[in-house]
Length: 190
Image (tube, rainbow, N blue to C red):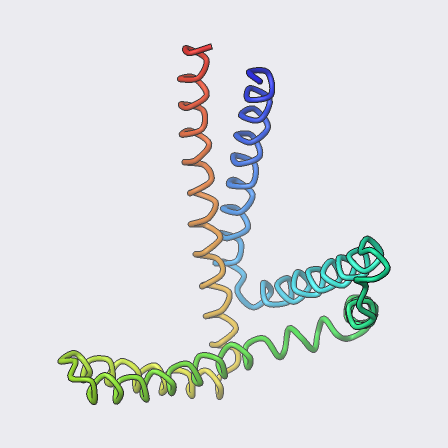
């Protein structure tokens, strides 16, 4: 048991440190190359689709025959075909061009829904409904601006992802030191 715990701590802490450093570096790169980062994000999304499709196919094959769903297999095959086409065709470029619009549209729709939420807050008697309405309207206006300025939208997406990766990376580096401290405490007990 003790040996297993030691091995778990060793591999976990070094993976945390490595992934933390890597995520931080990628986040910083995204901050300095926002428009190029959109293309990289599109490639990562397509790779995630490919892995998802493969996972569906494997899931279908691993299920007992009575529990298999043809829809799982069909979905997996179609997802893999789409991902392969996107990676080796023009799909990556198309997705990179669409990402800023997708982000801006989802941002705008979310803001409009929050406008209705502010009116619901008013109906329910919440005093802060005015602030919620004001910020929702400002968000909707920002979303519409992003819809008509895709380069700005692409930069916003890249900066957002860059900051998220930096935060994730720094969190993993901090966790590395915490796990290291916990490991040292366990060594004293062993």
